[in-house]
Image: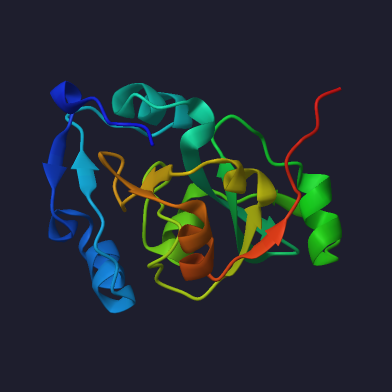
Length: 171
């Protein structure tokens, strides 16, 4: 398990996370340590550097539009989503990254702080199988300044995700 760099973060309670996300943690009965950073961790690379973990140990929550319908994809921080594989998985005609306003409307959070669950609306969720390669992954806790650790199986289960293979393959 990767230990966060305590010099760069402050341990907080779940109630210090985004209020909607803190409520989701309570409803799910999850007692997790939320870490707050003075600088935003909007990208997986920024989060990994701040936490002191490997890039692949970051769980990105990315919103896409599949034929105009939002879908959340959980992906490890070192990988990219292959939209063609998402399209095939969903049986959709067209898949593209969602614009910031749709992300906020769907999840209730801004890009860079979207957690894997605790969203404003119920959305279909796909989780890339690569997340299971880690003992613990770190995900956004509702703001660009907060993250939390969780084992990938629990994260995927609470997100209501379908396990899939949608990461880009190296050429």
